[in-house]
Length: 159
Image (cartoon, rainbow, N blue to C red):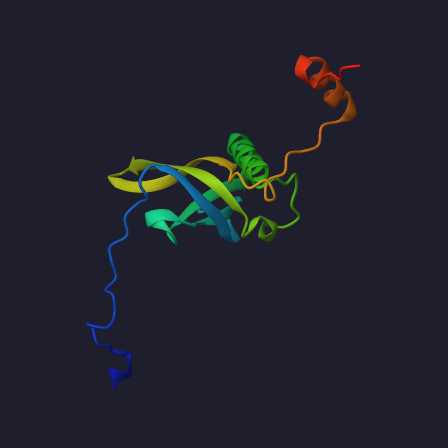
C-alpha cells in the first residue's frame, strides 16, 4: 500500500505551472555548475544555474550554457567572451574551477526567445551587482594612473 505518499491538499501549496522570467534585469548568483557533453557527443559545455535573489521572482532559476569545447570555433569564442563577462561582473580575473563562481551576486539581463513555439529565457548580459566588496575594480598600473591624472585637471596637485 502506498498511502504514506499522500497528503492533505489543504495543507500543501499545489505546484504552479512554470513560465519564463519576464524580460529584465535581475540580481542573481550562480548556484550550480556542471560540465555536460554536447548532444552530438563531439564537445562539452559548461552549464551554469543562476538563482534570482530578490523581488517577485526570487528563487527562480535561469541557465546559461557555454560551449567551451566545440568543433565550431565561433561557438567557443562566444562562450569564452561570455565567461569573461561573468568573471568581470564578479570582480575576478580567473578561476581554476567553476565552483569558484558560485554564491557571488551579480546582475543578469534576461530576454525571452521563442523557438518552435516555445518560450525560453536567455541571459544576454552580465553586470556587477554594485557591491564594491564583491566586484573590486582592478588597480591601475602606475603609468596608467599618471596618464589618467594628467588628463584630469581636477586630479592634479596644486603647489
